[in-house]
Length: 75
Image (cartoon, rainbow, N blue to C red; front, top):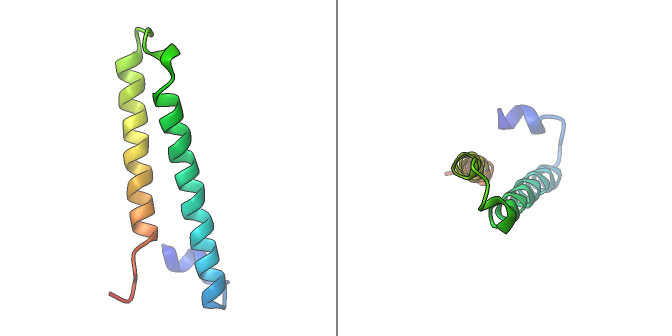
């Protein structure tokens, strides 16, 4: 899949820049989830455990995506 994303980027630098932008975007989303997770207004919500589970699941998937994008395909 990764090869399809960058097949039109001829230079290695362009591929690296693209990967860096993707990872930065995912990390920004992860930071947003952390901010939401720590919102004191949510602690009193009857749905709090479900919100926590959803946010933890989203953070886990983002972490997995970052790991996949950061793989060194030379290894």
